[in-house]
Image (tube, rainbow, N blue to C red; front, side, top):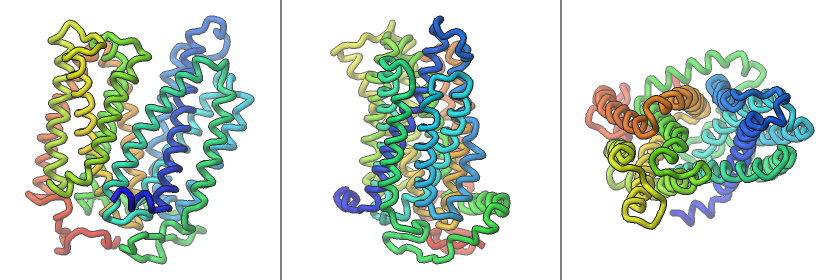
Length: 454
């Protein structure tokens, strides 16, 4: 299966583009955030116009446009050719970076830069997710989704590490912006190789619909109607909206864990900030990579519902254990000891089970969302995930100061367990005892890819 996926040229183009775009986007975003922090702490740059709250403002601006940008991008993704949209977004990012090369050290102007780049990031994410199902077969979908999740986490970690090194050793952001522009140009060239009118391209011909793209002359007048139609569609298809909820919960929890990992590393493991990526974030990413690789096997063996429920429960318990370690021990020390190796293993395993919740959810959305609204479904997903995550990450940063990192982790695990039990009531109400793929719609037919909008 893996080799057939690698031989799929269109998937490889999309995957390479994701790798390039995600890596460079992370490098640029974190470089700006770290640069703001560096400036705020440097007395020599006291007149730069950037205060101590600058870094917090940067992160807020990165999440602030998520909901409106992603929702509108979802509508546009169902109207225009997604290949053209991805190409235009990357070219725009490249040109925009070049424009800011000579203003890279400017103060408040960088806030505009952060806001515009955030809009591009959220919209591109929607276009890319909505395109995946068009370039892979149904048999390849599980592995392709897992590989995309692995790349997302791996490139984010690489981007954070590279951004830290560059900001620490370079005097400004000029070189970072120049290299970013080059990366986005390369990504655009790769995207150009995708089939034209990608919205109507289906590698396994599961549906042929020559009229997915509508009359663009009236397209933007229909944005409100299109959004309402997509919400109505979600409500009418429980397996789809349940999967959207699952993916949103997991991504939000993952970002919350990442946001307090620096405090956890300092308070519990007694490691410096530059070691957090090595001993906390990289093990989580390794686990998520493993989870993405084995997801397809386990979903076929156990079914989506049982796998998600079991993984959710185990991830909650492991999170609780990691929090309690901070209370039980006097603090772990980095070294080749049984306790520390066990601690690292627990983090890797938690990453595996977190992905075994998220990956099936994303796969189900790709599998069951009607091609005519897939862009809008992912627009809702990306918008809801990033908006909720942004709010909760800000709250978690406040709570961690009062509860300490270990207490916050325990608190989060209890919330997750409570959410799991509440989620079972939702499943029973809408699915009974059936798996997601066994859902029968009110018309009496099993939910499949060919569902049409009414």
